[in-house]
Length: 536
Image (cartoon, rainbow, N blue to C red; front, side, top):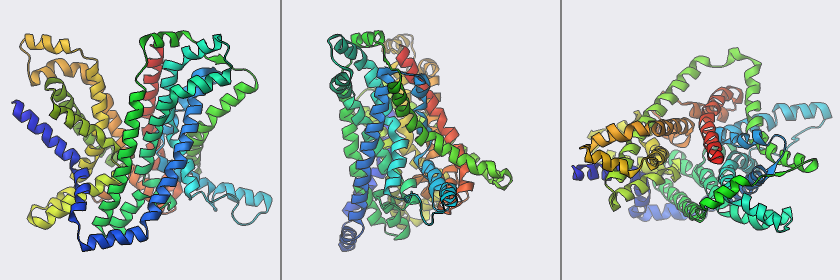
């Protein structure tokens, strides 16, 4: 029995690791044609892809670090009118996918948009009034105000747990407020800020919607061009390897930063609860309020308002029948993937708890890394072995089963989002004492009965939260869905992208707003979790 369970865990590990292994194995197919392709790419498009991605990451990293850490400091260390509302409102940009924010700003700020048209009519100016939004600068703006909550959440947690009582001690010793922030708060938040920036940059590198819609030549858009436009799978795999290498570096930086964050003591928590934020009045209170309100305005309020504008014009022209079909497709794929992801997560977490070994730890760690792999890399990593198997054994029809049914897209979703379910289930297991397992075994409960009769009743809430988070992530996923979806299975994310690409931004508003409403679910859960942690 133990051998069978370990074999199943090993099979799961192979299924999850297959995309990465296939991308890396593409370098072993080296021949004269591959060398010529790589040489041509190095002389033409590859430097542009790499340079654009580097500049984008540098500017987004600086932006999210500044906005996220500044808002965290303001919310944690100071008290001003509206602070309680802004404390959770700063999480709202997480509900809006970055590509939806890009569509909204383009609809308003483009040459023929309502804002530029109104300014030209009022002032008599001709030509372009504002800079082109579909540019590298526009992408930086979109990513900064969509992804800064990663830094805000981690920095806020670090400051609330460790900085308040030290700031109070420094005040009693006569240190001025600017010196307390510079010498205590910012150094304490530095590991959290680094971890948040790494997470934001991983999302930036994995993005396809913004880069493709704005016409920015990044590594991710280059992968799709090499595969779909140039019909060159080797070039796509080699670009995917470069993107995967960048993600691995960022993941290592994030893990190191997370380790540096784990030094808080219980006495520190108690002292932090006794300290109180500094009350601000007058001009200082207004500045603090503006500092926190502007990111919410730029990352959530304005994009949602821009998308609501075409909906208020004429409801009759909106494709309501098609919208229902798109929504059902999204829910069907999301619910199916969520059920499978929760089952896999429960199996992995149960195996790690009952049979702790190097194999189970390795499998769990491998599954946990899936969320960091960009959707473009997963697509290439799945299609490469499928194409090889189809050429070797065409009678199996493997190509049809992966690309013509939901099997391929659900497989890609599992590789990408199984880590989300696993993290939630592991947090539920962390609240179940090991002594309960020992007591159950003494009463004769072993194997699957231990899961069904002891663990499962205590894991229902964690599993439900895991399924909900996976459902939301699947509905918002664009790169993998765009390539692997079966015919006549368009989702809300795909339709929003296609309508925006065809300059039908008014019609794209309906599916985009639906994705925003769905995205509010994990934001509400995160806000409740942070508030519960702060009250403890």
